[in-house]
Length: 134
Picture (cartoon, rainbow, N blue to C red):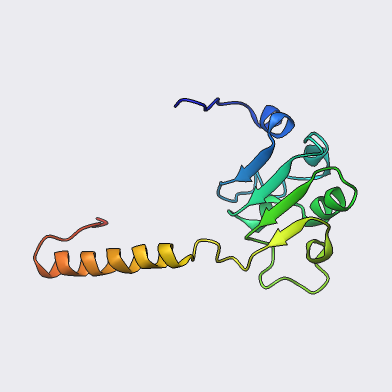
C-alpha cells in the first residue's frame, strides 16, 4: 500500500506523530502502553485509543500528559466504564475522552440502519446477506 510502511512496535512509537491503537486486549498486551513506552514517543506525539482501555496504564499516561512527555491523547475507551471519579485521565492535561461512542456519528448510524433494512428485505426475498454459518 502506497505511503504505508510496516514496522516494529518500538519504531512505531518512537517515530510516529500519532499512534492509534486498534487491537484486541489479551494478557500479552494488557497495559503495554506504560511509562517506558510513552517515554520513547516524541514530545509532539499524540496517542489515540479507540480499541480497549486496559491496553494503557492510565496513571502512566496521565503522568506523561501532565509532564509534557507527549502532546496529547484522545480516548474513546477507559479501563473502567463509566470511569471512577478519581481516574487520573479525567483531569490530565491535553486529554480528550469520549463516552465510548465515537463510532456513533449520524452518518454511521444511518449506514447501520440502511444495512439493517437491506438485510431484512434480502432475507424476506429469499436471498439472505451477511450470513454467518456455524
